[in-house]
Amino acid sequence: MNQANVSSMVKLVPKNQPDKEHRLIVLTYADCTVNPSAWLQIVAVHLRKAEEALAYYFHPIPYISPTAPGGSKWERNVPIPEELLKRGVTLFDNN
Image (cartoon, rainbow, N blue to C red; front, side):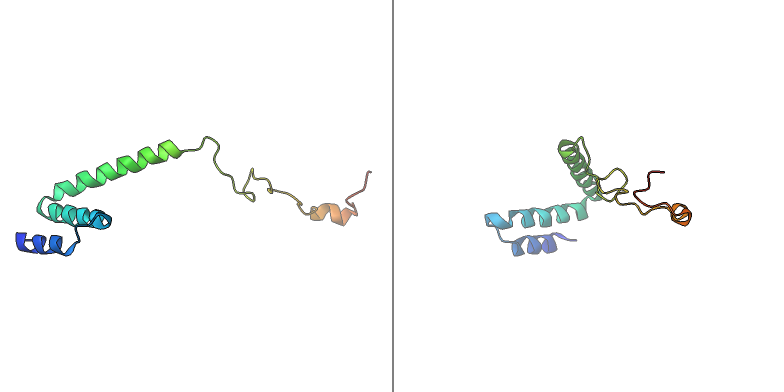
């Protein structure tokens, strides 16, 4: 990518505040085409920030789906085993 293409890309992006992020993305892309190792550094920084955010928001008691093993509905209302039904055992049989 040559300088004329980069400057034309940058001119297309508005300079007002809401589009500042888009402008930075275009400038970063233009810089990375000139220096490919910069892209790896940018990715490494974003990965480190994402890992820090995950570590910060990690909950000590993880969510367990109700129907998963250990959940509140796990093995609730389990059907009676077939072998007991064949022997004639009922739910309220006290023998």
